[in-house]
Length: 424
Image 1 (tube, one colour):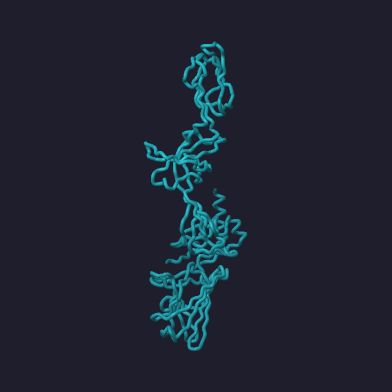
Image 2: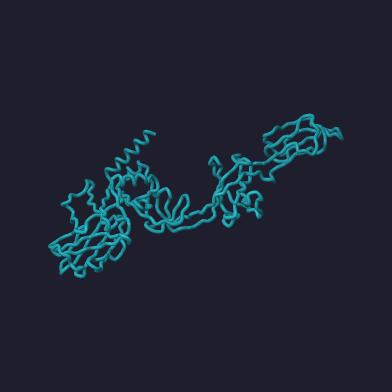
């Protein structure tokens, strides 16, 4: 245990040496772009940045007396760019400037934003989608002059060499279509099948001379169970097992007189029934032919199919029995044993889903971490239907994206270790 903890701490320390960090500042009403000039040696000096803080707390870009202040506004609305313009530090009417911004994302996608005048600023035409992690290019035209600035703005990103990721046990797979099973959880009990039981009686009244089998013995059809001397003929005859099975009861002793009482009860337990209790609220969801997994109280799981739903309700519980026939050649299931049944009530195909084990909490979002080359980046998800294994993705992730399914918490821990946040 101690060695495992030490190894995990070592892995996190190694990851931290190559991770990309994320930065952020967020005044009360304007959330500004997070900027990062990453050269694997730390942050660039302030003097190397193409901007400084503007009067509204945004990023101020200036050249030859022309200036623009870039902000990302998201108070009560989806995030959008607002740009304020200046000439020799004095406000400039927004209609006098043509502006465009391009965001180049890690996966190669480029988002372009045009701008239109609104009040005293230029408003970006479109939503700045999460994550706010991209390389930014600003192009502006004013009074016959063209201006261009570029900077990096990364969040939720970590670069980890493949060899180190493999050593840390980070596992990925490709996001795509899946089938989400809707399951219904029921309880029930194992039952002996009536057509696999046999009550063994004496054919003629008489005295028991020999008993050859005991309680719990396994017998084959034709095995000798006892010998009885007939009271009428005084001849002895054999009592044999009519079926293969296990002797569940033995009510016979040497010297006793036989009558109508069964001498032995034999049951073939190589197949058993499970009768699941289905209550009124769930009846419409259960029908013959549905797949079901039966789990014993010790966790053993067996696959089966609902083969019959009773038309009658129990007087005591008002439940209806759904019957599942199961192979029991290994003897794991015992009549009378309580079990749980997970019935597949519906199978829903979805175009895009991710594994539940991949999902992490990041800020206010449920996320997975996409992998592009040796870089991992957060993807904020819009989620739909789900089960224990899969959850449908309705937005925030592209089909075919490679994403982390195993040890994703290591990626999250590395990103959070930088102390970065991005409050929305």
